[in-house]
Image 1 (cartoon, one colour):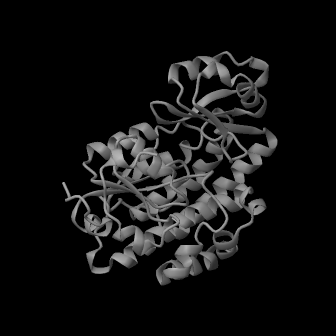
Image 2 (tube, rainbow, N blue to C red):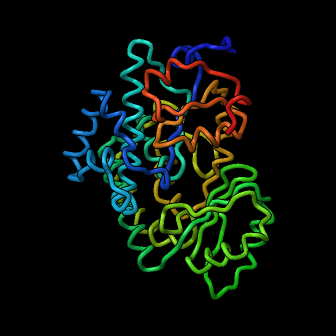
Length: 334
């Protein structure tokens, strides 16, 4: 155990840690502005990826408007890239003290960022796949509108029973993400999600909020997208990861290229078991969790699971984050 007050950067160079990346819904204006202002490595990586894909990534990641960030085809690549920029800035800042994470993981869209940082996919290949995935998801959402609700503080079985009672004519309503014992995300047809909104008191939840996705990820509504992604997933060059990647679906490490490739397409329509991912982080003995995406969603979920966590791309400059002391998880729960 590190001594109280040990700076985060020192802990990262001496103890096992996990690097986690968030998914859709975490995008916000200026989400990579601080990274780009202070990290030459982040700027160089962004220039390379922007040239490869033709998207105005710098404008979206640094100055993206709320309207731009509501577009799945723009927001998803931007969130993916912002995680890569944060990881690149961290490696650069740590310098000779850099030590790779013991494991990496990503929530939904963040899974692809994690695969790149583990060395399983190239950044360019993953970005191309993320763009195609986003295009197909947005097209399917236009054809069959859906939505998602975050449900915090409610019993899983109660939420599942309530979803099962949704009138059949309103469409699909299912638990798309299990982020913790009492932190769930419900996904489904728009009419069904609105029905759940209107009956939220039945859930006895502490908080029910809309997830800013505009579609029904991790539900059967995305089955057509899953099927269309299998061919491009099969063409991707997947390498053996240099560090373990935690599966979104099982929480177990993905160490085989074939297992990674199989999950690339399937997980868009499958339930995310982030609760199992965090259990995997605990089992692997990670001393601290790093949230490397926009905001602090991954850090907050890790803290609620009893893990020490820090958000690299937060309101503080990276040097200040790494100089801050690592404190016990119970002091950090939000």
